[in-house]
Structures are given as structure tokens and as C-alpha cells.
Length: 473
Image (spheres, rainbow, N blue to C red):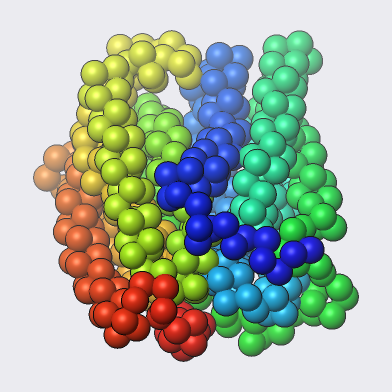
């Protein structure tokens, strides 16, 4: 273990560093998103759209689990990177140990809560009399894999911050490949339907978790011991606030999906589309949207170790340059996604099975309206993660909550009174425009403060580590 193993983060070119960290992070997050996408594709073709509707109903529990994993993992990663910039190896080691213990404990608690609350959960997230039996079958198996899922996703953030983004990517990729191989066997050969898809998913999650556990004993910048694994509030108080934005982002997805599903079922039943088509279509649209978000978050989260290390070391000009480079990449991704969603909505939805004309009609409306301002969303999401990397949890959290909860939930509830079943689709563009404006205002303020710190130090690299210590830690 080398205490200066990550010193190249303040010396190498920003472009090369972002390629090194962001690309594996993007691929890792894309692979995680593909778990659900692959299930949807095979279930849609092997079971039908009611099977897909059932997985949409169960999907929020995996998002809740991911929220816990990312709050712990991303928070630990941000704190670890800042500690590395300060050469504070003792606190780095203990924060990782506390994070690992919390990941294990929280995942077990989640399994117990989900098992006892199954019927209530399925009801809240929009199960209908047509898909409830599929939903129960899928739910019963998926919760078994929750501990593996939580541990893998939390550890991925820590592994990337430790300087091994390729390992994080490979461990997740192997799990996804296993899922892709087993899905068609379970559904089309063994005829196990949604139960088979769920079994294939947890098999992949188990293998990825084993690989993440292996990494703990081969880390670059820390070595765990029994004492570091003992959960202590003073370390959780450093970790969790830095991960709260990731937690709230994921949790808001759960809330908005619950509200969205219930609203679409209610107003869909009063429309020509019926109750099942709008809910099923929107579930698929949200999962396709998650692919874009995986790329967006991958760029920003992949840059997190670079931002945190340079902020901890006092290199403010590099911090600003990283943000500008990151946002340029996010705009390109957002523009490409907008083109695809506006021009090819039906071919995209057809990947998940061929259905009737009404199904395709609502799918086209959903992609073209709900995701019309995805480019603004890309910038906002990236800015929130950047603020988290600077050790500014309140600003990061506020930005996440604004778009994904404060604006989206009331809009989904109120707009159907005017537009009917298509009303919830307009919640996306409105929330994106307002939250983008807020992100712009926040970053103007943050850049001014970074300029002040550089000026006060007299030179870019002369900013005292202790100045960051007080403000960030």
C-alpha cells in the first residue's frame, strides 16, 4: 500500500484522467441498468407486457436498495478521495471499514422489511389484478439478492475512489453476462417465466458481490482490520451527508414511480388506453431513461475521485476545469439521447415486445414529451454529483430534491386534471427547466468561492489543505 498511490490525480492531464475513471464507471453503471433492461426484453418476448408490468411494480424496491448502497458507497468514496488528497490514511481506512459494515447491516434490514411488507408494497406501486400474480413471483425471488445487490453497488463507488475503476467495471460486467446467459435459458428453455428471470438476476448479483469482497483484501490505499469495521457515529457523520444526494435521487425515483404508476392506472382506466398500457409503457420509458442517466452519472461519478483529490489538495483551477470538461460531455450525451427519443420512439419500445397500436401510440407520446428536455436533466444531475464531490451535501441534496421530488410529485398529481392520462408526461420537461436554472445559479456561486480561495492563497496549488479540511470535512 502506497500512501501517495493516487498522487497522479493532481499531475496527469484532466482529459486522460476522465477517460481512465469515467469510461469504466459508465460501463459499470450501464451494466447495472442492463440487469433490469435485459429482464424486460426477455420477459416481454417470453411472457408478454403483463409480465413487464409486474417487473415495473417490483422495480422500486431495487431502487430503494440502490439508494442505501449509493448513500453509503458514494459518501464513502467522496470522503475517501478528499482524505487521499490530504494524505490522511487513518481516516480513509476507518471510513471504508464503517461503510462496508453499514452496507451489510442495512441490506439485511431491507430484506426483512420487504418480506413483511410485500403486499402493501405491490399495492402502493401500482399492481393490477391482471399482473399481481406475476409481481408476487418476481418479488419473492428478487429480495433474496438484495444483500448482494447493495454490497456490490456500494463497493463499486469505493473501488473507483481507490483508483481501480476497471475492476469495478469488470466485476459488474461479469454479473451482467451471467444474467444475460441465464435469462433466455430460464424463460424459454425451462419455462420458468418471471421467476426464472429473477433467479438469473440474483445469480449475477452474487458473483459480482463475491468479486467486490475479494477486492477488499487487495485495495491500493487502505487495509482494513477488525477495529476499522466497528461502526462509529463520528465516521458515519462524515460519510452519509456526502452520500445523501445520491440517496435522495434514488429515493425520489421510488416516490415518483409510485405516484406515477398510481396516477397512470387511475387515469388510464378512464381513457382509451386502459389501466395497464400507460403504467407498463412508462415503466419501460423510465428504464430506458436510466440508461442515459447511467452514462451521465458515470461521467460525473467517474470524475469524483479526481475532483475530491484536487479539492483536498487545493488545486482549484483544476477543479473548475474538470467541471467544464464534464459538462461538455454531458451536453453531447443529452443531445444524442434527445435525437433518439424524438425520432425513434416506436423502434425503441419495440425492443421490449410487439404490442397493439394503442400501446405504441402511448409509447411515442411518452418518449417525445417526458424526455424532451433530457439534455437539461443531464447537466443538472452532473452538477449535483460535482457538488457532492466538493463536500457540499446541502447544495447537492437541494438540487436533487428540487427536480426529482419537490417539482415532479406535485406536477404528476396535478397535471392529469388538465391533460388527462398524458398529464404526468409533462412533469419531466417542467421539472428539468426549473432545476436547470437552479443548477446554473448554484454553480455561479460555487465558482466565485473557488476563485476567492485561489486568490487568498496567492497561487493555485498554495491553498492550504487545512482550509479545505475545515470547509469540507
